[in-house]
Amino acid sequence: MKHLYKNFLRDRRAYTLNVAFYKRMVKAATGRDAAHFFQPAYANGQKIYDDHIFSTKYKERILQVIQRKPSSEHPVLRARKQIWDGQYDMLVLTLELSDAIKPALKKIIKAWLVDGTPFEDIQALLPQPSGVVYKNTGPLPTVNEDGA
Image 1 (cartoon, one colour):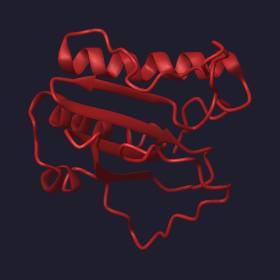
Image 2: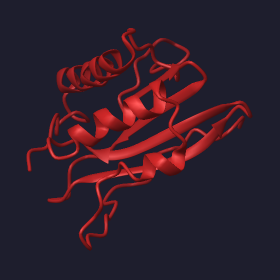
Image 3: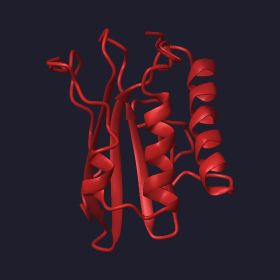
Image 4: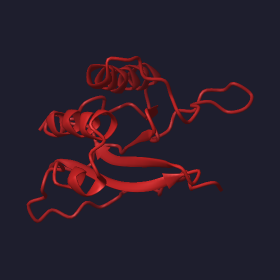
């Protein structure tokens, strides 16, 4: 299995290319350019380079991608649903980007943003683990909470 953009947290060029990868995926699914929903910069304009690598809003749905540093030899793609600001359904994908999950990722992005697929059906599109338990080897990232 080949991990994609595996140095994205250490190399700004890789990070930028990685963000462009997600933008291309969203544009392929929606036909529109993707704009960040959560701003990737501090109030002073300094760009944020962290594992909350991509977010966008299309119609009344939000997609957020949290990309982990590769540490598994098996595909890692998990999903959870949140309600943002009391009004928007948000799909949060946590993944290690690899060639193995890329086809499922394309399907999930289209299903969530374009087709309006319910979260319960999105779960069926996730790769099924083969007895592998994902261990987070790093500190937990800050999660954007509803209205807080």
